[in-house]
Amino acid sequence: MTGEFPRDGSSAPERIPWEARGELGLARAFARTFALSVRRPNHFYALLPRDASPWPAIAYGLVFEMIVTLASFAYDRTLGAEELGGALATIEPQLEAVYPGATALLERLHEASSVGSLVFAPASYLLELAVTAGVTWIGLRLVGALRTSFGTLVRLFAYASWIRVLGLIGISSDLVFMGLGALASLGFAAYTWLVVVKRSQGIDTQRAVYASLAGSLVAVVAGAIVIVPPAVALVVWAIAKMQVPEIPR
Image (cartoon, rainbow, N blue to C red; front, side, top):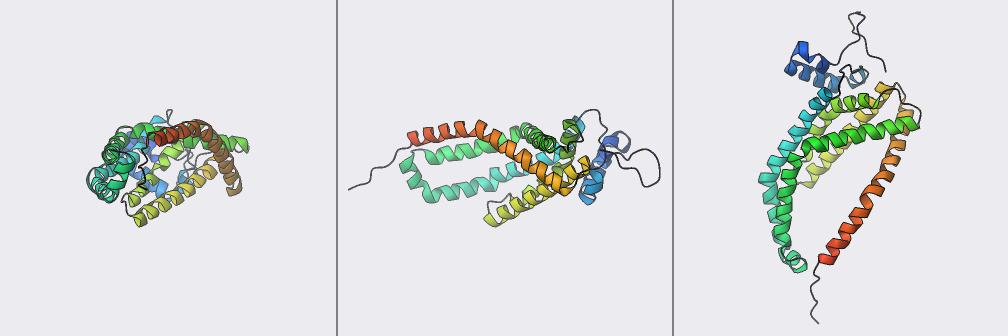
């Protein structure tokens, strides 16, 4: 991957604004990085990251993750809790007949999930970033299109984390808004991933798609090996705990 050169004719490759935060200041560097990655993604993702460590880029992306997490947490603690209570009230007799205490358990799980999402947001963000970069690295390696290091991919996907804010469209429990939010997030995520891979590796769309398919296949197989056995065990345990009401004759 080669860095882009400035339009003023100077010989020094253009830098990602966030990596010039020492000269620009944090706020200005953040705003310029965000604007450039959104307005000119094909140009931005061809720039060569020059920070010695990936952590500054990860910190940049974490800002967007926390914005979404805090908004979701506020919604869950207010409107979300009311909506859950209303939904459970309509089926409470049936739930209690199958599993006594199910309504209270679901409410506690909802609250714990909300708090857990907030507390573990940085860890889940790091994990998702590592998995995305890892799957991409494997896919590119399998199709012979890898031109950069794993660390460079981590940096670039961290800079692409702004697309997470699109998830706020589906923060409501309304099915229409949830669907719109999911479609917007998935669409922009797929497009951004394609741009990152093409521009950073200097490859065409066809090879990028092949890399995506190869990496996804590896991820699916690995995920099935890791997730399926404990998931089956959990389902079996839940079924064993259920109390099926007797049907009067």
